[in-house]
Amino acid sequence: MKQPLSVYVHCSNHSLDLALQETAREVSIVRNTLQTARDAANSIRESSKWQQLFESLATDSGKPTRLQTLCPTRWAVRCKAIDALTYSSALETLSALANGRSMRAESRSNTDGVLRALSSMETYLGLLVCSSIFVP
Image (tube, rainbow, N blue to C red; front, side, top):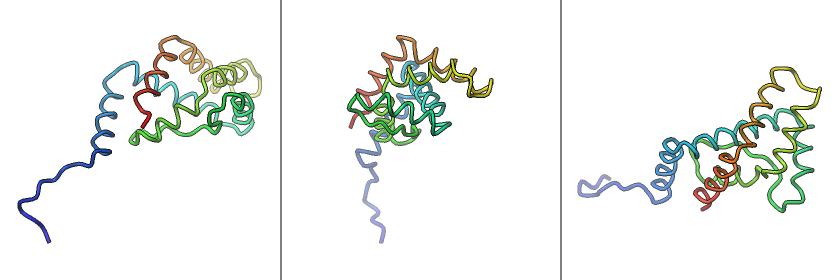
């Protein structure tokens, strides 16, 4: 039964998620950092051997070592994915991949671009900002 006098209101989590999505789209440092983090995770996750290398480097950090996909619509998942992308471990892994001979030229070129983007101070600052924004 419908109530004609009722007013529809989004739940607070959904409203927060919509606001964070809009922020992620409009603020360039957040948008670029999320894209770089997504590309880095996808490059590492391309091979189980590369993922094992990342996990072995990330074990000492005390953070989750399993890389997760950045979900474009759920802020709580974004937080877990950003937290799992241990910065120094990701840099070391991508550096090893870019300098290695075990990947195709196209993948190596893509990995090199992701490594350059991840190495920038703007991306490091962006990861800190994103981590602060998306932590529940």
